[in-house]
Image 1 (cartoon, rainbow, N blue to C red):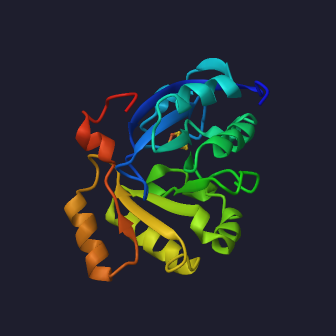
Image 2 (cartoon, rainbow, N blue to C red):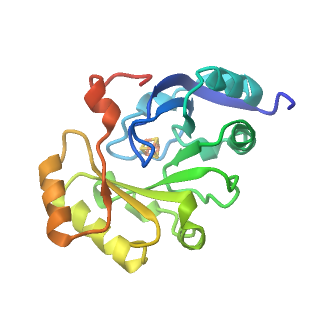
Length: 220
Ligand code: SF4
């Protein structure tokens, strides 16, 4: 491959995948810099800094060298950088399990179809629920195996909103739906009890890395 375009990289590291159906796998992460969406509970605000300029090829080689079971491109918001598309494509040529974590406010229709897309749906307490890109839903419903919808909830109101969202958009039964709690804001036991009470067809998840390492640790 050529060196590809330049991308701005916040960090590249090797860790345990913490949030998705791949949780628990070894994973090489490429965290692209920049977002600006301003979610209230953002836990990667440090990725707003400019980051290091690298070619797609250099980032790919560095990530592949870890020999991890999967590779995830995350952020910040990766899709704000045009270089994220050739990066994902090149990763798919080399690795069978490529994940993209995106904030859900941009269209994902140009992402390589081999990528597993973990798509955030922002709940009201994030302050940006009005900006969820609903145009992504028809694409996800047409090819559900490519998508995981991720809700991170901070309150009962968020939970009820998310329950209504998955019902109104008929997501249940087709796509993987992940429900988790904003770390330190909503007790996991309460969330588990609500899910059980409602018999919701969602997969509850923890932010695994925040239990393995101190929650504020970077590069894990
Ligand atoms: S979209 Fe993600 S990276 Fe951007 S502000 Fe929201 S939580 Fe943070």
